[in-house]
Image (cartoon, rainbow, N blue to C red; front, side):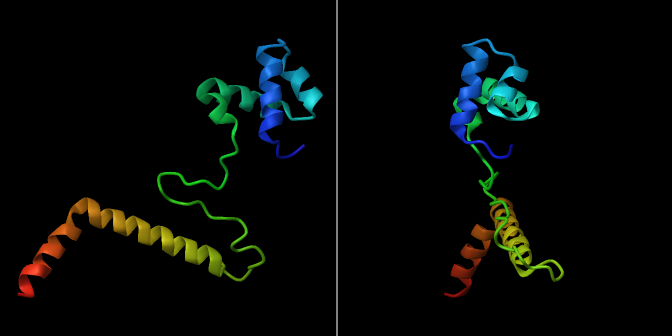
Amino acid sequence: MGCYDIETRRIAIELFFKKNRTRKQIADELDASLSSVKRWIRVYRDFGDEGLKDHRGTWRDGIPRMPRSIDKGLDEGMGIGRRCHQLELENAYLKRLWVLTGDGSARNSKRGSSNR
């Protein structure tokens, strides 16, 4: 058991919808956990083929997830990789807040008029 590629997931979907196999039969045949097979069927129903893709490590709401390899082997405190990632997220948040509150455009126009 473990990570399954998209082809294994597609086989499970085909066995369920076209061959009318039970979830338990599919799990046994593919040597997968029953909960994995149930999840694959659920996400396929909700999102189609896109739901079967592995989305780990992808961006959500424009904010990248922490890559596991960054702070691998760092066991002192928070770890420099995690701290760096935390600061990057904070920076991204503050930039968005700055743009949403309109401070960015107001400051730029004030700077232009005061420098003249």
